Image (tube, rainbow, N blue to C red; front, side):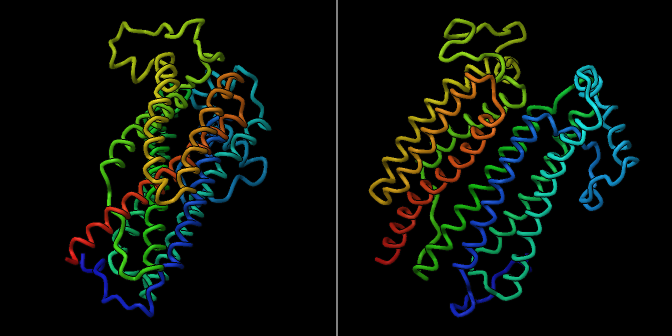
Length: 358
């Protein structure tokens, strides 16, 4: 761990503002990744590239022979055998879905470089303030882990009789991205505080952040499972499903299986647990309002738009642009929630600092 040790902090070379701006730019790239990931999922493009080639995979197939080889690899997958093939997929159709998966992976590679190279530069220039090196390394490792999870997700849909990726791996892949996004925003805000006041301490985690975060995590997890199981398609009506408030669902394998696998029950849970999440976010927004009214407005706006998009997505039978918008605003909601948590954490850190000074 000696390599991670911080040299003595020097105010003349530490650059918290530059670091904060860089991390916000990385957060924006993660947001774009989440949006493109949504397009990739909704266009059924995720299984079009059947190999993991971090370096050579950067270049797409060139020439008809390479395209045919890539297409032949896809034609061996259960998705093609049971769904795409019988539906009449052509090589031109394959090129369309290949593009989205390739573009998604390319963005991941660019994101890794956009994080690793500036981090190395800031490190060499000793521009990283004391205490932040381990956190930045952790964020870099999270990004690498996210890429590995993405491949495990794809691999889960390439064998057996599964025509889609595992919804468990999809949820791990998506939630890791959202957790990384929140970590980037939190760290960038800490650095901005440090730039304004060299004596500022990093924000602390609070009890409110714990219980609101737990509720939001459950809602995001349910949403990821709904996405992975295509459960959004089981009903195009709201508020009723199948003409009733509580839909019929498969209880023959036990409640545990149903809560994690049954698309009707998961759709129902995601639909109505959303209002539990809204109540929790209202509490958060009211707590942060005295400190930053614009943060409170951002939280209210994000969950309000998200609810409207969720209902509209159901009514349209998961229209592509609405499904993507729903996922995109979900990422925005995570970012502004992290902002709210950070504001509360700043108050706690300031209180601890004041007590220590007595």
